[in-house]
Image 1: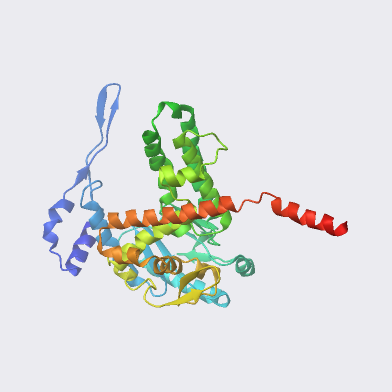
Image 2: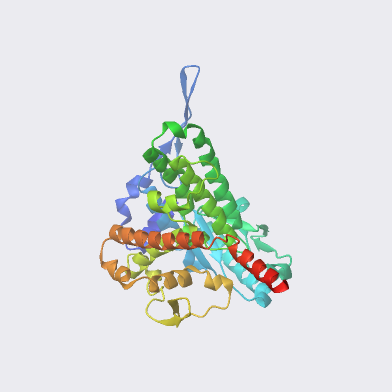
Amino acid sequence: MSSQIVIKLRWYNVDPSLIQSLLQHRTQKVCMKCKNKLIESAIGYLITGVPQGACTSCLLFCIMINDLPLHLSYCLITMFADDGSLKISCKPDDVLSTIKLIEQDLCSVNKWLECNRLEMNYSKVQFMVVARPHLLKKLGIISLQMNNVSISRVDSLKILGCTIDDQLSWCKHLSNTTRKCFASLSPLFSFRNVLSVSTRKQIVNALILSKLKYAASVWFKGSKANFKAIDKIIKACGRFVLGLQKYDCVSSDLNNELKWLKSKYLLKFECLKICYHIINLSCPNQFKDYLLVNTFNNIKTRQANYCKTTLKTNSLWGKNSFRQFASHEWINLPESLKNCTSTSFNSFKSRILEHLLHSQSIGTELNQDNVCSLSCVDGVLDSVNSFCD
């Protein structure tokens, strides 16, 4: 690989002599201790590759694979370190023709690997078809090959810690996350009495809530059952921190004492933080003009007045997309919050958190006031009895 890196550095107009000495004449050996004796293997010379563990190794590897997207004609590729994903979309009637296009790009990837003296790990190559449930049933069996090797089809893939299923329901990721959270939380109850409230809060933030917040703007959106499962974890964490029993009411304490957001408002908080970076252009260039915050319609109903984006979406996926959801939340913020983007990010987070906590407290009070005491049923029965008499 060292000779290939030298060629690519020259292509990027970088003088390869700066690192040539780092890549040449490198050796390695294996040492082990057996019966208090140090045994060493023979010295081997490194012909290809970059030094493992060196500060420059990651940069050199990125330079090595950076030109791979230029060799693809049809698919969009996303790369992170040595992992890569090809994506392409089509209509249900064009699946067979699209498979041929994918295989052509896979063939190009294989040629690129051979030219760069790299190898594909076929055991980790998988593909997934994402569609609505009724369309997945119609598609039937789909086969895909790369270099005459069949690629296995799966119904879910784990990418950067998120489990994506073929229906984008996020049920598998939610199931894995809830299992990990409760597995981390359950052992803590046995010795919570010896911990202070601040220590419990730090432990919960580090071990449980961090798992929930990871990529929350992507996978939080879903059914009401998903929100209910996430709220169950947050309430359990609140009972652990505050020293409450299993079935004690904790909703008001989450808002007033712990200053924690439930799933619905936590999703808004995570999305609005990303909106701040997009509007302030402190984000990758592909997110420039991504949000639809300049043109919107004012909607007035009997119960509320709100703003709605002009982007029309016919599918549930479009309505739940980050672009649609984040744009909707941003344009419905009070003007005082939208104008505070010139302040620091930490100041913006504090003000958004205060705003969402206030909205959450209002929602909690409404839910408590709307609990049916059966007085309405009694009134109806009294009316019926009086009429019969």
